[in-house]
Length: 586
Ligand SMILES: [Zn+2]
Image 1 (cartoon, rainbow, N blue to C red):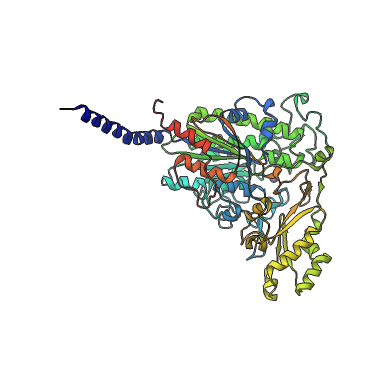
Image 2 (cartoon, rainbow, N blue to C red):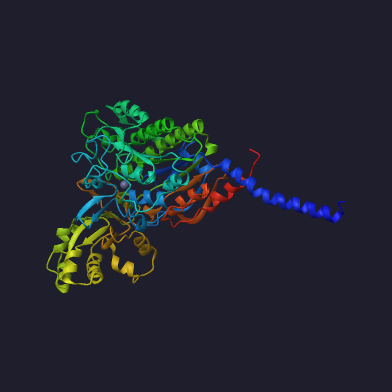
């Protein structure tokens, strides 16, 4: 007979059973809610304020969709000192600092061969299409020109990426892809286990290396056969709207803008004929580079049926035009403004495409940037801010070697051979063999050369790596960011920081309007925006950084964090997500 007491106990048992069952039930709901697709968008050189600046000019469905629906981190930054492309991309991909993931610069000195090398070069894995790599005669990117081989692979990346952990979590069933105009915008994101494609300026096609494929997939061959790049032959980059509607509408012809031969510094910017020397280069210096990237990415999504299988798939798209346009004209220019309005339309098209194929409700989108952007000195000067170009010639090893102050250092330490081995911004490399032979204290020599460099006009600080690693240096945010960039095998002996208004504008012969790469705030400031199913849009003002992105993606899926990751999952993206995960009504 059920007494009142036993009935109560029975009820308690049922309640307890329900409590035990509930998490199990929730877990299965969570399983169902696992996103089908993760789309990681990285806009090269998109400083954190720029999407806000043009918000009123954007259309619907692009940036506005991200900023209305997403968790928007307003105080987000790359926390390392060398704010360059491969460094920022790999940090986003791994959640690790460059000291750990190893991509300390677009270029570094290989101490074994004594040669400067390009970040993702790998002679073992030539391009799948022979001879379509860097054309030394027309390549304007000085870092690309330093590559000693056409081969590319992610092998130089020393830790796992989020995409690697995704592959490991389900025996490789997840489909993992990365696309970018630049090889170094795609390779880090695809990780070691995914597949990367990038644009060949030689052919106007998207290519890959034998690391990834023995043969092109059919959809890629078909896209390349369309010869889409050639369709821009004889065309120009024209303004999307009437000039009067632009913030920079009256400022098209500014003396500090780069006038690339045939392309000029005012609209319309002509691409020339498809057989002209710089035709494909000019496409990448315009929004067309992003258009081609998007078109190829859509073919990829269709061809590989991304987001339509049982696992969570991953696609990284890195848009590079913002960077090229920024270098040529500066971030505060009519060209940059029009480029972002066009990127906004491209994003709207991308989101519509994803919605049709996969459903935005099944997709996690994360947007960030590999680095921010400095203003052009001429623009800063208009507002009374002291800024000018820095002549880097005195830092050339041969010139620096002969500088009286450096000669005095050599005399003091009894160094008779060449001390300065290499300079590639921001690092100066000393000749360790010479110092080893002479028995000098490396840290002391570094410090003495730094004292000399700091005297130079335009140099803010020269930081010796010995002091950094021994901890005998002030614990400042600047020094911390340089330490996060320090990898003993790849970083130089001295990190040179220029003044906040001091910029190198000579790209190995090509003079540009602006260049990033500093630890100053404008170069570190990036957007981080997550749009995840069921997550309410909100603005978050606490400080976060790009090392948090990969751990957040891992946490959303409940998979292992990348091996070198030091960031923390962003709770605003997760708390709401878990609320949705237990909602079984849908
Ligand atoms: Zn750049």
